[in-house]
Amino acid sequence: MKRTVLSLLLALTTSLVSAEDELSQLRLVEYKHLNQKIETLEKAIRLQTLTTEAIRKENYDLACKAQREATIATRQANIKDVNGFSDKQYAEICTISRATSEPNIPSWLKPVAGFEPAGVYVEGRR
View 1 (cartoon, helix red, strand yellow):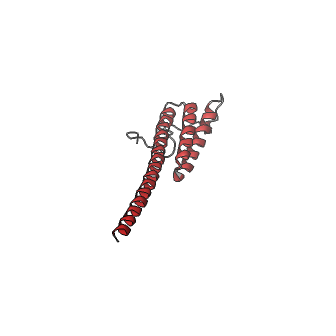
View 2: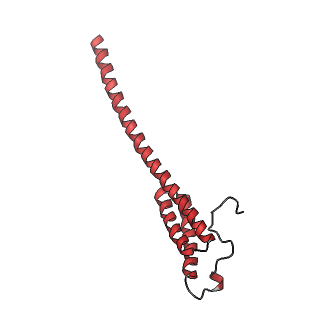
View 3: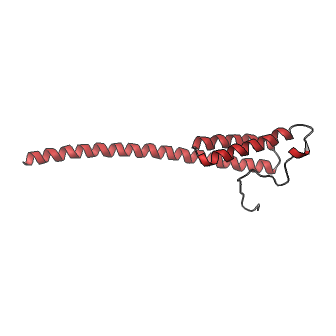
């Protein structure tokens, strides 16, 4: 009887250790994934800030490039509710960038004073 109980405990211990190792591996994979997502979002935020500053200085070419990279980073992070807004900002900024690079800019394409991309809030500006 003691041998049976002892062998059952040994078998359970082995299976518990195996399950714990699998759980640890899953947690490690999840941690790495979330860490990568955070880094990608930080990159998107930094690029969005660069976009805003470039627009304030009327450097629409730089703003277009920065917004493009921010849009790519947002898509890599797979933030679905932000992807559409990011695409829209990219289109708006790059349209202005292309229009302002031409010598005869139509007045309706010139950015309005105080133009900032939709969804960007910078403390102290409003």
